[in-house]
Amino acid sequence: MNGNTNPKNSAGESGLFNRISVLRAERGITRQQLADALNVNYQTIGFLERGDYSPSLKLAFGLSEFFNLPVEAIFSTRPFQPLSEQVYGTFQGSAQKGNPS
Image 1 (cartoon, one colour):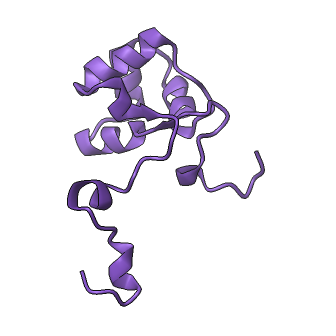
Image 2 (tube, rainbow, N blue to C red):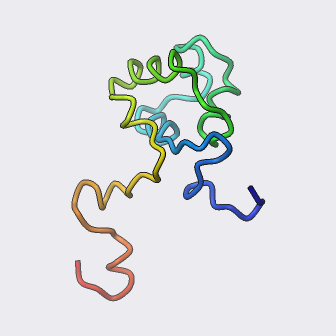
């Protein structure tokens, strides 16, 4: 992996994409708060978010229970679609290219 890779479009070394940082931001919790709830080190959360670490099944299910979401809503082997595309069926960037929305 080279230093020019965009982290939002990269699965990192783990080979998994995840939404952990987005889910934390939505709920207004810190890495430390999430780590405490899962009984792991706060650095583990950072490693997970960057894709530098693959979670154990126990940790993946713990995240699923914490966020009350299925595991596949948190982790994927393919990049997640932007929420605007997923929810509304359009990508907001199209309006910036002169296309009406």
